[in-house]
Length: 153
Image 1 (cartoon, rainbow, N blue to C red):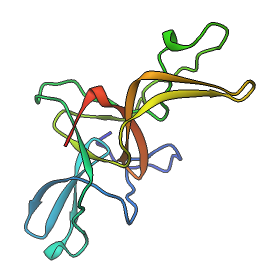
Image 2 (image 1 turned 90 degrees about the vertical axis):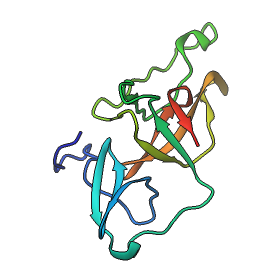
Image 3 (image 1 turned 135 degrees about the horizontal axis):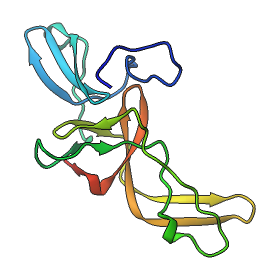
Image 4 (image 1 turned 180 degrees about the horizontal axis):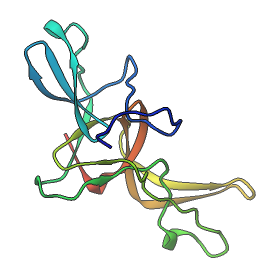
């Protein structure tokens, strides 16, 4: 995080795709900064020619204060272990260890918040959790953040 990109397939850190949506973090002359992979990243954007303003999007912000802890970023969204009925083996998840959203940063949500869930193909059971997550554009992919960890605007 915050370093140079690498050639590792799991390194999301240095690539943006055309058509993605980012939140503007600053402007200086012909340069525009966006929040990308937990960092403020600058690109050349004379007269705004390399960007298009988005309308009607939801932006999620991390941290209420600059001292707030970073928001964890996930690749899956399963219910809490206690929400699984007896006899079903809970799926587990962990935050993506290389990535988080520092306080004060913002990212574009690609969907409304939705409940955590898990599907068991063997018997067709769906377990729906009590927490909700936003799908956000993070780096050049999508990721998940718990809606309780962010503020949506």
